[in-house]
Amino acid sequence: METAGQEKNKSGNLFVSREKLKKAIGIFRYIRPYMGYFTIAMILLVAGSLIFMALMGLPGEMANTAVGKPKFNFGIDVRDYGWLFLVILILQGLLSYFRTLYFAIVSEKGMADLRKDLYNKIITQPISFIEERRVGELTSRITADVEQLQSAFSITLAEFIRQVVILISGIAIIVYWTPRLSLIMLLTFPAIVIVAVIFGRYIRKLSKERQDQLAKTNTVVEETFQSFSIVKSFANEWYESIRYAQSVDDIVRISLRFAKIRGVFFVFIITILFGGIFFILWRGALMVQNGSMEAGDLFSFIIYTGILGGAIASFGNLYTQLVSAIGATERIQQILESESEVEIKPSEKVQPLHIRGDIQFNNVRFAYPSRPDVEILKGISFDVRAGSKIALVGQSGAGKSTIVQLLMKFYNPLAGDILVDGQNIQSFDITAYRRNIGIVPQEVILFGGTIRENISYGKTGATEEEIIRAAELSNSMEFIRSFPDGLNTVVGERGIKLSGRQRQRIAIARAILKDPRILILDEATSSLDAESEKLVQEALDHLMQNRTSIIIAHRLATVRDVDCIYVIENGKIVESGTHEALTLQNGVYSNLARLQFDPVIG
Ligand SMILES: Nc1ncnc2c1ncn2[C@@H]1O[C@H](COP(=O)(O)OP(=O)(O)O)[C@@H](O)[C@H]1O
Ligand SMILES: [Mg+2]
Image (cartoon, rainbow, N blue to C red; front, side):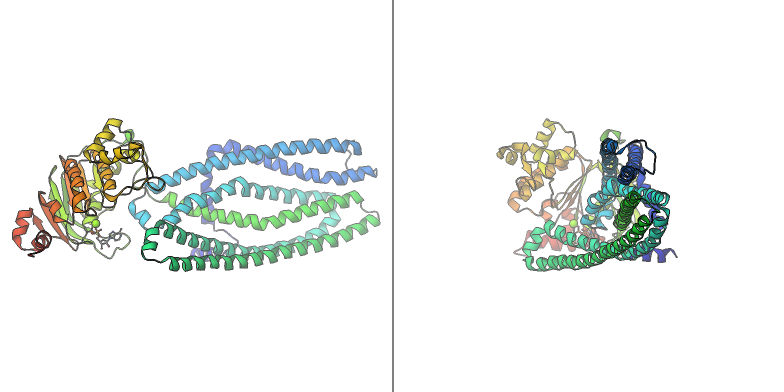
């Protein structure tokens, strides 16, 4: 039953499942802190709607008064109506102003809270969370979906309630005022509603199709813009252009179908509505003629019928918007419900963890969550004493980076244990533990901002002296000084572009500032040529002093004097020992070494 219900919803059913509705209502917790404003806004809304309905009855009553047959005995004559209108309009204006303002306060502040929560939730997720999703998709959760909720809370919900109030009070008024005419009218109402329901269903389905297609198109845009250089290097502008054009054309096709159906919808509503109105007008005119009703009452009746028709016509759109807001809520709630791996808390609240830096891998097995059937690590065991240096070498794809990712607790091993200082890393608080690990990756990504900000990312709140020292130790100060703005030079998208080795040295400065007990160099020098490698190597040597260091390297020259080299092949350690020992062994390593050190003889 449940799945059948969900199936139906996908195809744009009118009804929202109870499950979904419950989730949607859950989002009201973001409104709760502003409940005072929300309640006042609601009261103003209802009051405003009722006053509006009363106001719409005044012209008819004024007409009755003018011919000396008022229905209600207000005791005022036609001249006083001018003042009455003025007072009511001013009052109405005030109500509208505060209602709009208060709904805006509630929705802006509530949705800002939601955005922050959503952002925090996403950045506290484990790495696998991002890997399983497209960045564009997550971005649209936090932008488009929240935006949709925002307009639901500030406009759609209010409008919906306003129309409900208008509908109920409108029917009550005309039934009281002109019972016979109303009866005829109410007989035509259900027909309009049924047509609206049937059309609304198609419209919703198409609207969703259009949104999905739009999201697909945006993904193309985002992917190609983000990987601009890849598109260029493959000279695939033509291919992407076609891909985008097709996607956009699909939107047009769906949108036009959407527009046609919507057009037919409006035509139908208008035809039935006006057909009905003219029929009733004619009946009303007959009643005025035979004296069973005042002309002013017919006038009021026409006005109210028009308003009621408008209210009913607006329900289709409003309902669609509310349903799509409920859809947005559901997607947002899914993210809010997922389990974070860390908590957001200020540095001083993190219970510090001081480790020595002994590392032990015990028969660690691992497969990535995205490919659970492919075992990447097949029983890795090794032991590193605090303060020593080890190297992981082996072909690309052997599993070296995976080993350090597990050490950083980006993922959990499927079997086996990883111990640091003899304690399973599972037992550590992730934030406190990761503070102890520094990494210099192969491809350094700098944030858009100043060099100073990028260096101090290693230790937020570092002093000027610390930053300069780190820049000096990492051999970066020289090139930083060559920029007119020095440490305040803006890098990244809107600033200057640093070279690979310059970025590398910034990354080293970051790591120096962080002063980690365990240092990971994941092919930190492999993108550099031998000449520039020297400067970076010097900086790295500085950095490696007095810490446990794990060096992943392609070029064996950089790992010659580590305490132990582990040769990884296909997820297993196939050889280990010092450079000298391994060279004598005539195994994988000595083969590699011969190729690299003695290319001519080898
Ligand atoms: N996030 C990931 N999801 C799925 N598979 C991955 C992921 N990262 C790496 N792999 C796969 O794991 C294997 C080992 O990768 P990696 O540890 O990066 O190798 P190395 O660093 O030795 O070059 C490769 O086959 C790679 O395709
Ligand atoms: Mg790697």
